[in-house]
Amino acid sequence: MTGPAGPGDSAGPVAHGRPVRLLLVDDQALVRSGFRMILELEPDLEVVGEAADGRQAVEAAARLRPDVVLMDVQMPVLDGVAATAEVVAAGSGRVVVLTTFDRDDHLFAALRAGASGFLLKNADPDELVAAVRAVARGHALLAPEVTRRVVERFSAPSGAAFRPELVAGLTDRERGVLRLVARGLSNAEVAAELVLGEATVKTHVSRVLLKLGVRDRVQAVVLAYESGLVRPGGDDAGERPPG
Image 1: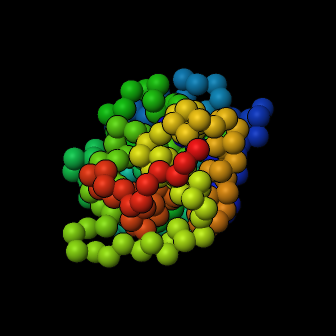
Image 2: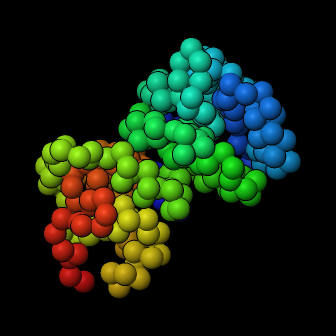
């Protein structure tokens, strides 16, 4: 699932008429080669560089200014989480974290560091291409089959206090929209659930991002869990607002 970008994006949507510039970051050359082969089959995608560790990634991103960085997490010298934070802070590109999921305990940290989303390394080629295009257009990438598992696993660990003040500035309607977005619903699905027009939902989502001061939908989901608005296991705080 994808959603609109919010204020403070590190890199704006790619203009029509030029290829999406990509930086591939993984400590395994075979992985990088495999991704390059898939991505360069598409005329609108261009791999402009590769890096074998996080430090190389930060330097290459600053030099090449890619639109999207495909970032592995577990790497030598500087891991993908720290590299993501530096790339995003420098405005050197939008980051999609690549992971095997079952071995990776750093996804939540990567999202908090500013990643625009994440993708499983065993994703189908079509999923990889679609993810790159979506993020390049300024959307955030939320893969429904993994997003809830990741956020529920790494947000609000046992004994941690929720922070409801994080969403105190939202209206009831905006909280309801955010709650459904955090549950993995698309704008169209939120619209159907709340009996609203999809354009109205898009407006609500944009306002939520602005009020929360987050860059995109992924960051909003993380914050929804941290605040306690949405809780692991589905025991959400409060009731869904009326139509």
